[in-house]
Length: 268
Ligand SMILES: [Mn+2]
Image 1 (cartoon, rainbow, N blue to C red):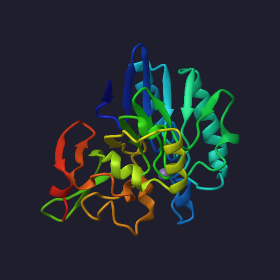
Image 2: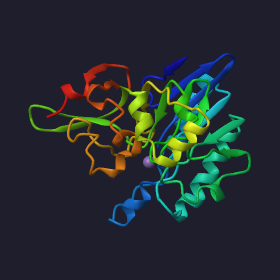
Image 3: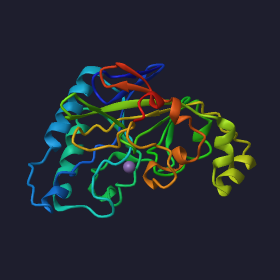
Image 4: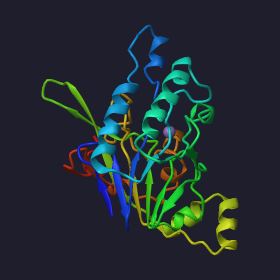
């Protein structure tokens, strides 16, 4: 039902007759932030759009889900984003009728930039049958934790290699980890625990898939350099901090599908 669209950082979810493409962490406009450091890079948005349109042509999805961090600046929107983002979505709209954005922590003020007809979901995520999708910077809803499989972005997982000359090579990866639903239930914030118990919603999630960023330029945390679950690292989001996800034994896959073993085999 879920397939990775190798060698692209994209996923296809097939349920009955509907096909959904999911991508995460576009970070449109990241290059603009380099201007402050005196580096000028032309807009990378046309390249992102082209890759995405190629995927849409090839896999003909009914629905396209952008799993958070569509834009790069956090609270506001840069001038370039005002230009790039509406045009980006206008072109996508010609190919897909149903486009949904699950907001991430970088998507403040995104809505005014979106043309009519683009749906913005609650940040607590949306479900497609037994697959729950959320960005990862905030807790998903108790309903979403009923899904057997959870999919998130936010972390931009990459792996770092060093060749014999000392050159560093960074490759984006997919991570697949087991979840302990019981400890997930206990880790939920009290409000969500109450809500869940009132509605009799026990978390059922067993697997977590962490998507690589769709934008090659966006850096990530090498999974083999610093532990993902270290408490001080607020950036990983509440699910990974909750200790209910077995990140040590998470499976690591390159974009072409190569299995790289488990995270704990890669810790340096
Ligand atoms: Mn994020």
